[in-house]
Image 1 (cartoon, rainbow, N blue to C red):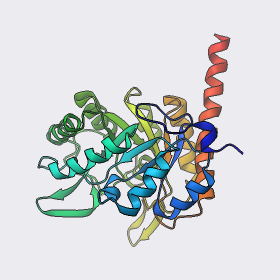
Image 2 (cartoon, rainbow, N blue to C red; image 1 turned 120 degrees about the vertical axis):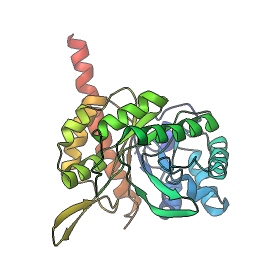
Image 3 (cartoon, rainbow, N blue to C red; image 1 turned 135 degrees about the horizontal axis):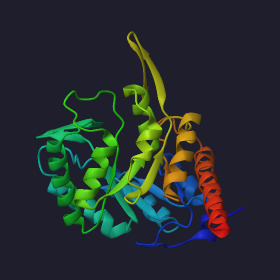
Length: 298
């Protein structure tokens, strides 16, 4: 059985993963991942969980010896009407300097206003005014870090009547204006397509390929209400078949993009999470072989 030791060790930025598919590292799996060293390409964590040092940072340092690392933030609140908090950036930058992640990301959303910090990633209206504010904060963070960051498309359960453009156009525009990259969450696209009634394949086909540098996959939940059913991005179950189908289409369009399996609630054994990662890797490998054969024929 292939393990992490067979693939890579002591990998540093800017070296990309040798395998495209990775997993989100959660506390439940700290011991198991160091014991089993599964053949995953990379790991991703929320940096805010590691600002305080201690046990969490100890285990992350150990895992970082074997796997490339991506830091996926949830607290920069890039869409807020105020500049990103400098103290938050300072603590984040300390982790970047310490762990040398190959990628850094956050969301096209907001979660803070003044002294209020909300435990959710709230949606933005897709307007030119919002683009200006969001891009200002992205520029602030990229200048502070001295690094290009990735911005993830959010999941949402409402839309604004003042929207001036579809989400894919919004994402393309912020990447063009700031030079940031795009973290394309395929599950979020599917969830929103059901909740808001659009074609998820049309969304994928209209994202500019070049900035897409990471993909997320996760499980979602159906919740029924008196006025209908919505999908909720719960990250607490396997990736649904409909999302795997959309991911196939995504890889066919964008190629071998680093892909993460997110699982944040009702966390299963590490082997099940790795199994989901293996499914993503198999899809990537299959499409890459097809492309190679096409190139050889040409």
